[in-house]
Amino acid sequence: MAEETTSKKNDNNYIKPEGSRNLFSFKIDEKSKDYEAEADWIVLQKDDKPKAEMFYIRYFLTEESKSPRPVTFIFNGGPGASSAYLHMGALGPKRMEFTEEGLPTPPPYSLQDNHESWLSFTDLVFIDPIGTGFSRMIEDKDEAEKSTDKKDVEYWQIKRDLESLGEFMQKFLSDNQRWESPVFLAGESYGGYRVGKLVKMAQKDYGIGLAGAVLISPAMEFSLLNNSDYDALPWIDTFPTMAEAAAMHGKARKQNKGESTGEYSRRAGEFALKELLPVLAAGELYPESTRNRVLNSAADFIGLPREIVKGKSGRVAIDYFVKNLLRIEKKQLGLYDISQVETDPFPDRDALEGPDPTLHTISRVFTAGINTQIRQQIGLKTDRDYQLLSMEVNASWKADLKTHAFDNQIGATDDLRYGMSLNTDMNVYITHGLYDLVTPHFSTDRLAALLKLTPSQKEKLTVKHYPGGHMFYAREKSRKELYSDMEKFYEKALKLK
Image (tube, rainbow, N blue to C red):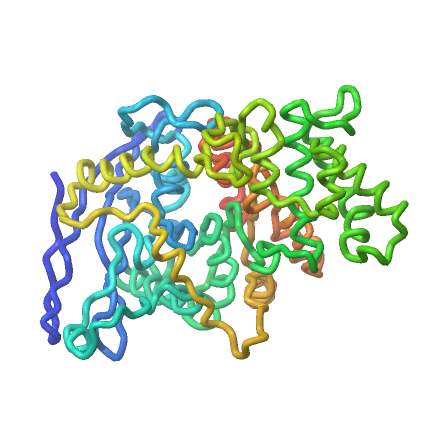
């Protein structure tokens, strides 16, 4: 039986929406465990007035324990994505079903028990940033009467978004009396960027000590996502994944007999750093004969025609690559998972206009799953539509960290390094899907090698990748391996073994 919480009214005549709670059970190692699920909002304040309602779903085991269980705060990315992806794909007690390759099964879609839920070793709090899920700004009637112009939403900015998460976590720990619990953060994609920044901010500015941080398919440095004719590193980071795609689909011309796609990708990474990078960085400062040799090799590694790669001076955009590798077959690859192949609906057009097999086909599954979980299982009653992924939020996002027009250093890697020095007991786990071109694993591999960590800090950092795309956990084998690794990671962070 779902239990509804009481609405709260404050001095500003604001009434908080009603949440809902319910009790469930699931099996861990053949033993049944009871847990409480709650869907509710925490009200964020500004100038002592309610400013926004941040929606969350939390799962707590109900058994008595001598020491507080760890609690993990979880969010996805976008920006503009709700937490439903990690929630219904890998971490929650219920999940959606996918094929072995991580694709949707035929509709209709139904929930199933998740035997790899992280609830077995940590309590879970899934957070929807403002503008996603059921999280909304609270309308200020006085301000609304002053102007009819559309205004930018305050929380759709880098720093303000992080501040809202810090405020949420403080309030949540206080409301639930969990300040003695070990606290972990877990985020995917831009959510991984959030984790990287919060490793510093949550501890330094909000007094929340962290036992561990998990970054899943993170985008750590914005500068590495915006390539141009005048840089080199963004093109290098995607190169090994392109090479793996070429080997996977029978287009690699540099692959040795008996060489696996993974080995081929690693060798392509070595080539990219040692030979391709200097040519991209120096351009015509290199002799033409050297440039031709290197660019011909690059083309052979990634399976595109030599003249095309030379014409692009070695800078092959990811959307061009997935559009053209199998173009003769009227097929296109997925940007988020290069192992996925779709029929190209517009094979005669140069631009990539077809649906991405991951991003566009999987959304309907998560939409069905999260609405079933919230409305049917937990029993929340609300007229709001659940915003799985808001492109309005994404398109409106702003960088409010800049102190000058020329200040573009708004990445998260420095914050991660700061946080690891601030708290020498904190453990960090960074992971990617090996087949993801949007946030390529090679970027993190490079950045991890540039952190200048001490030997003791290196022991606290784990970097590991899994077969699959951006949401590699949709694949059963990768999800199970991630679960096993996370169980060990939490044990290490909590010093249980």
